[in-house]
Image 1 (tube, rainbow, N blue to C red):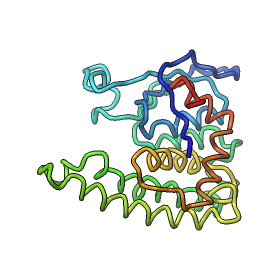
Image 2 (image 1 turned 45 degrees about the horizontal axis):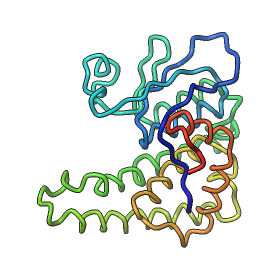
Image 3 (image 1 turned 90 degrees about the vertical axis):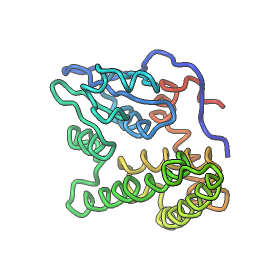
Length: 228
């Protein structure tokens, strides 16, 4: 599977006019902050981005925004918001007409939050031993075994997600912020050799999302070349 990647960053291409001061998203290339970036594009609202790196997330200036020294962080006026699920929920609530937290009904919202919670708490967390096996057992001799065990766990979650997409274009049957988050998790799965070739519904989902204008713009803004 070809996954969108890139190397340099062009100017932001937000097209919509607005009456409010642009929000600011702090992101790290390859991080889960891409989900927030995609949602900002889907909303077609003005925003600015700040590319962070391993040095800049430790500066006093950024720690004043996010004391944890992680991404994402979203600044909207006097509000500094961290944690992916909080940012995605805030953006969705700020622009309810986009219906990115469901179709406006309690049931629709609950379904969207169900999948956001699953992706944030279960799927996202399952990748951590792959990214940093040394945090779980410092002996490097066990690093690959720890990562492989985590890959099996991630694949178990992908089974659930693949089944949910059977006969659907979106997780809830309606595009929500959870779909942006899922796309990022699937990029990680491809990059980290989890193996998604046997998940036909997920492969179709990735193909659709990679053709989406908002997704392509967000990736282009972060990584510059959406053709690779």
